Length: 359
Image 1 (cartoon, rainbow, N blue to C red):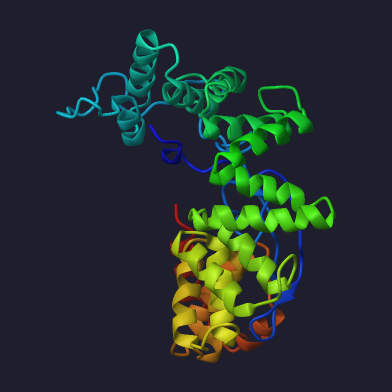
Image 2 (cartoon, rainbow, N blue to C red):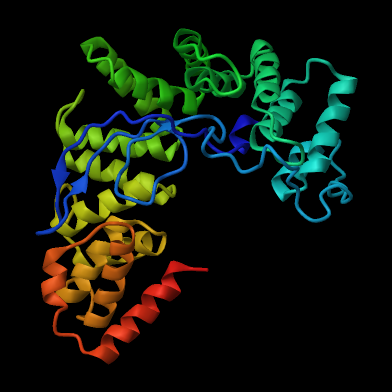
């Protein structure tokens, strides 16, 4: 069982490196460095720190009830002729969390040092999947796995100690665990440690943070790729290089990072660090807009209102403007540009916006 099978750790606090770059006029795009890894916010490039698992505010389970998928307690793992098949993780991956718990427990009964099984149990307790959510018990399993050499468990436990989730808050001990995991090339640990070092204001820490981000970025950790792009864009810790910034933003976008996708779209639209291509930028913006990013929704609205990169369509512009406004991003320029819509056009835009808002 490899640690990379689990979702990337959550993001902790905000270490902001704010600048501003806009797509023509209008609300500026916030440039910030994520904190160690975790779920992206729906806004612009928000700062974030990632924990190897869902953090206290990002858990999927409930502390009050057991969460399982239908049949999770009864469906067996998929049959396999491979004697080395990981039935516990296979069940976890398919959403059969009770089965995953049972298989991992059976493995530990046979082998008390099976740290991948320990890490899986920790993940289940941490997120409340198939069992009652219990951060303290999750921390116990992570600690056992970390002591047996699992870098993912060490990275996760380190962030839990930094946050004080399931264990007493201890910044020093948490950072030591991140150092231990980063030394073993755990991408999440490298990323989170880099973000912590970025906030110290020490020149040597800035240099090391760049190295750690680069290590995690080359391991295809999307938040690290986005963060490295921001540093190249700002010239912080590295020589300013918009071409390298654009390259890292594109890689982050290709790996599913929403903030990286929006950043790359802006550079692509403006022709900064990459050949200008408004139509391609519009495609990236639309993709990010449909994923719920308010900045992308605002930019798509502007593109439709002005007919740049897409055919001019004021109804589409109004629909995307409504979507962005629903997230708190207003735009006086769009208000003026869309002031001539009639009642029927406004009604169509409202229906489109409602459909895109989802259930």
